[in-house]
Length: 344
Image (tube, rainbow, N blue to C red; front, side, top):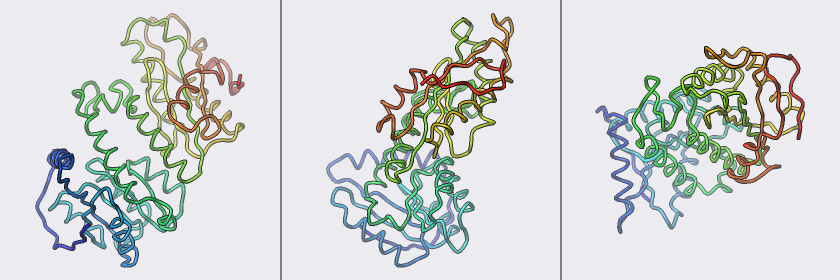
């Protein structure tokens, strides 16, 4: 591993070019003499920067090349001039702190993975960071317990997988929405991206010993509608209703023709889960029906499935399977102001 400090450049680069360079570097790494993973470390504390260098230097499987800057503006200049595989970012810097630094991270998270390394132990801040696209969030107090090299490898591989997924299909539907990552009708994340987000949430939850709840909501009457256009209208309206109740730290997706998936961080108590289910069901009472629907708004019903981590499973397949059984509750939408009664 090498640690370097360079002067800041001013040349521009595009995210598409950067992605192409990343794929080329990935192919080169698969050959006999792999290139090192290039990490941009943004950290103003010399002792913490040295600790990162020491931890990455201990890696036997992957070589790392670390470039170190102490400010956000210097990082911007460096990223314009060079290509990196990952950004390792401290939240407390001379020109940025907390939520401001997370906003900075969000701008670059679409181009390359960002892992936050910070002394700020704030779970809500961590959830916000993950929601805006940050690959991972590590508290400095846990550095001795976290395999930093492995965390970086996983973040780089996850970004590479998402990049490949985004290239599988052309963009269609809503302007600016890639339908391999986002549903072109509702604008919500796709099933594939939702599963990736679920895997990431599970990994963070197990490391931090926290909990989350996975909900699956199905609109039952959609089976009676043959027209995909009419189904799209109803699902789009339902997505808008649900989105108004979803926190920034949670993940909402369209996971099938008639169903939504929702990951709610930090929720595990039965009473709180039941209340959340009631809130989301009630939000659907204002859904707009497609023309010539065979049922009235007050007849529309939803079935709900629930999986709670870690109580109901420790892997994504088990959690998804339980939720997709839709055995938690069935409720009629709009006809009652009372939350649904859980059946399991």
